[in-house]
Length: 337
Ligand SMILES: *[C@@H]1O[C@H](CO)[C@@H](O)[C@H](O)[C@H]1NC(C)=O
Image 1 (cartoon, rainbow, N blue to C red):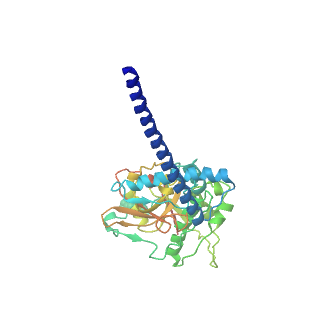
Image 2: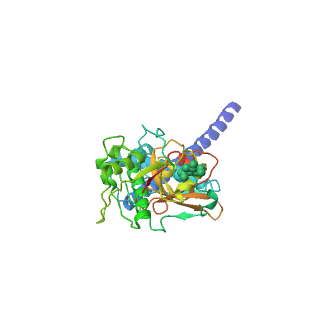
Image 3: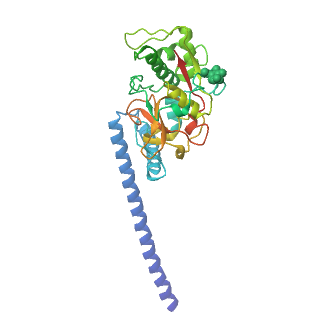
């Protein structure tokens, strides 16, 4: 009798307990469904904003999962308040995996990384102490509006052309917009392979051999005979400063990194932890220091104006690592007029 009462008592406890567990489960599932619904709705809004359409429901479901993963990454980086001097955002690349993003939006050819024949460096004897604290080639009329390489691994052409446009403006006083397309379509005999990737030095060499480059406007532009290019000594940010104080400079970076993919603004620094494996090319168009003293490079990118700071990214300058943040000091070069 007593055993029976005892058993009944525990049966009741167990029943109540399982009821509670069941309620908790239902609530957890309901909560998860709410979160899922909210994310699906957010994805819908994002699709509308960016004019995205998918082939079918399966593709849409797959993209939602990628979107969810990217949103979690972006929010976790932004939540680490005080750790970074930059912020990320859910931008137009939010439904791409990082591998897809790298394949579509970078394009520095890996085969010849770092195997450069030595060149002269005309700014070797510039004294860093004599350089201005900040330089902005945009305000000096040497930089065209930000362009968009689209889904093509042609960063190398955009980087080379931006540096070339700067050199032409500095020597002629005219800002012309040169044709990346000519490089992408025609510079295919050597290392440069159009949308499959290329290198800036090879682009400069192509322009010299080609006797110039077509413009995107009415100004004909032809390279003069004394045109050439020089490399900035590798892993030397002081040397990069000497060059950048004198003209826009092409640089290679590990720009396929996820922090680049979703960069919104601020100074991208070592805290991003990006590698120094070069896969992208951009152009230094200035340098300066933020109000908190953080020194930065101003880099022109080729992912359109809605990415980053109007198409630009500021990257930390003068860090201890001699390869620079994301390897920015490893492979810089500029055309000579
Ligand atoms: C730098 O200075 C040294 C010593 O005066 C000189 O030999 C060298 O040619 C100079 N380099 C450049 C690029 O002007």
